[in-house]
Image (tube, rainbow, N blue to C red; front, side):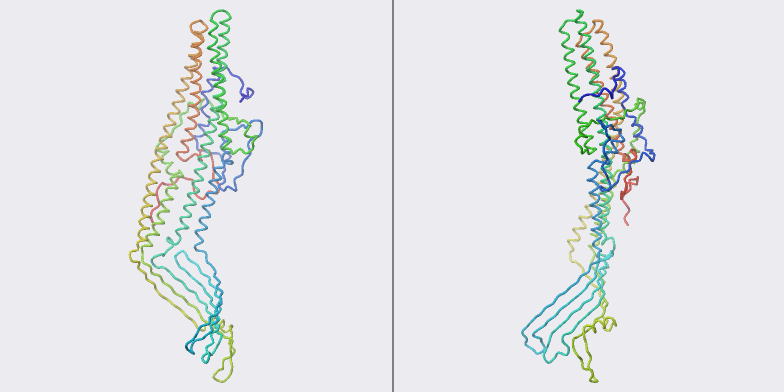
Length: 560
């Protein structure tokens, strides 16, 4: 990779090295400030079908600010599509669970012809029947099963000497129900799968929130890694310039007889080492660019070849501002906002629903059932009345009986069943109790892990800030030491080997400073992720999210 000098005008080494100390992002202050302007808000659709990939900036280079990198990541990264589709699948689970209360229609058509050997004149040797029944039935949330039925039957059963009407049409219209009064009573029991499907949907929604938070954090880390790699290459190029300058001065001293010709070897070795450092630094830039391209989901092969140029360069004053990481406030906010806490609470609520069901199954069964309806009779025959007249009967007469409610019928009853032992229900209840306690234990573990994570993030910021200060001081001292060693060398009081060693110390100090700055910036991003406000800090809004990302108490709901 060849450095573009046109985009990075040459500066005196001393000035350039001092500017390295200013690499702590101006975004440090921005990252710490949650206030957002309306035009800064980045809206991210939750639905995968609503998200549209955004093309990268045009030009020979891909010039990106940190905000642009985050925005492009949230629009393009495939990980969010995976989370979106998982969320869509969980929504279908609710629809599937509600299907238990979908009414259904049943149509039953059939015919039979049976011939039997008979031993009595009261039996028919040939029985023919046909039926056509219609049923509309379903289940209600309180456990009520209902059915509306219309039955129709044609019976042809001729019995010689005893048959008055043959064939006959039997028709009936009825409404029936069964209402559990103990076991399987209530919406808590019968709607449990719907409620748990909603919990699963909400948990998947928080998975999407986590995916967005991780994408932002990964984007920031990749961006600062690239900034470090670019600045590291510049530092290595300046180290090469210093090595060449030493080589030039050494050659002059050799030419005037002030040094032995063998002294030039040390400077040439140093030049070779610096050139090797540049090759390695160029590889680091390529790796950092590829990691960022992966987050940006670059599809075009030409875009994979275009270099990414990070545009954000912070002010030096931001280095003097100490980022305040309040551990107690951060832990409290993490408990109120982190998706992992919300998911742990949802798991507890889901286990409670299961426990309520298993406890209900311990009860005996007491069902109230009843029905009410009408029957009708019709026949293809002539009946002789008492006065000698004839009456024509047909299928329509059976329907007329139903319309006029000529033959009503009703039933009402109670069914009481007491299981002996009831080992299945008792075993399931014991398992549900254990699952609930396990969910509560996992919630406690989640809180403990968050405490450790928040404290570690705060500690990393403190260490990172002090590391930047120490690395900056070490780099400044290494600069002064090199200046002093050069003056000694000019006065014949030092050797090329000693100057090369001190110059190498400066190169190491510059690299350490750059690493400290990049790590510090990434630590700030990790802090916001750990306390759960990384969306607010980056002004990211999730469109169409079924759950709230606002702070709420980290407590399980009281039992109803």
